[in-house]
Image 1 (tube, rainbow, N blue to C red):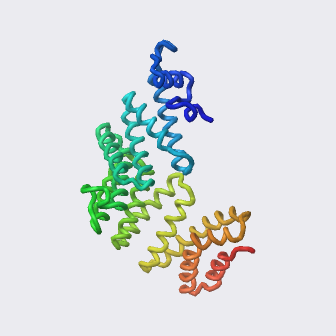
Image 2 (image 1 turned 60 degrees about the vertical axis):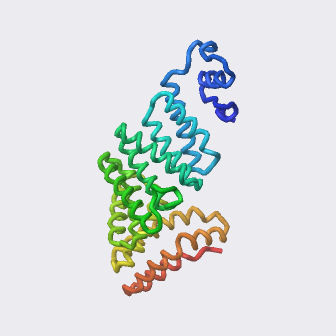
Image 3 (image 1 turned 135 degrees about the horizontal axis):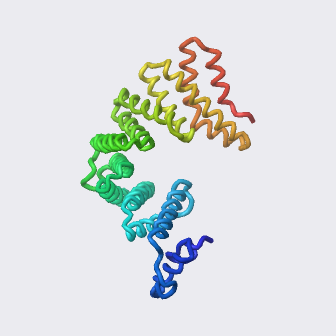
Length: 302
């Protein structure tokens, strides 16, 4: 068991472990080693705790909250405001996932205040996107700050537009892509489909520049394909669907060792409707054989 889990507030290095346990025990840590942990050691420890919390959050394993709270406390102690803002944003995301919008909103606001003061554009963009997420998802449940009913989408739109502008100032492609994806989603909800397509196309252009997980790319392609088709832009939809199929077939090839029932469940949930939409477009263009080949891919070997 890692030291930081087996001893309260103890950290990974021996020096910090002695210091932290001495505080809990009421012992003057200087009397143990003659000195307290250096700022560099505390910085390293906070970075490790933040990474540990973020990893637990990504992998949905364990409770990220203690690590993130400890990281935040250390960053505050050593005056690392960039680390503090970064951790507050991560805590905001965690509270949002846990269905605690007020706590999430408060953490995003604190992150935004600090990031604005130190001109950290990446964390500003993250915080603004987080605030947009909260208002868009939870609306008036957050309190008076967020709008209610249909106005929540327009309020979220403003947050995302600000986030995108700041990310562009910073040249942060990852945050630009994130903000563009959220803008596209809001435009869809507002039935402004041309604007949605424009946002998603810009997001796709960035995805082709940076390293992005194929799963994220596939979801974007599916969404863009459906929008192209709905707008009568069939040729573009066909090209996008073709790329989606290539990615999905690689995923499905990796699932072949699973029972047929589980493969079928994956196919039904993520693949079937898009393959059928693709095949329908091919048929409309008189490409019946190509359409049938796509539909044949939906069959799961028994």
